[in-house]
Length: 201
Image (cartoon, rainbow, N blue to C red; front, side):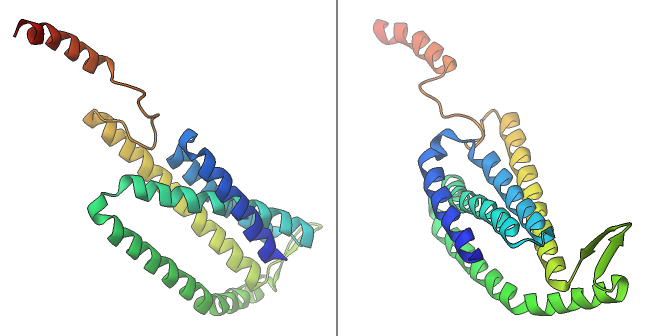
């Protein structure tokens, strides 16, 4: 059921983002959706109710769909055509490697974090009358959520630094500024200045 909660909104959101991406600030939405996916995963790991966890997983699926579509769109726009095939090949290789490592290392990481939780808190954190069961699975989900949110912060900082560098160079960042609808004022002035010469010749 949780798998359906992830894949169903991911497909719907991927379609919606594909239709609306021309009107969206792609880089900002990409980083925000990445952070939202990590945040909802963290909250889903905190819940003990199945349907509440399914709701947050549903929201995480929507964020994942946005990240998937916008990530590939940004790569397609930013990477030169000569390097695009190599970049996408490297990306697919890294994705498969990360999935393989996640499946291979997650059980061991869960066991290690579970033993640490049992040694420190006896797998239950109690503050006054409030208590939270913290097995290794929950700690692993929290760790994954923190990694995702950290990646989103790094992505946003990279986007902003690139935008500032482009602004200092006198060019707008293509993913942060709207597309030009026509020639700018400088180009029009240059054209007006050149027209008399063209007429005189």
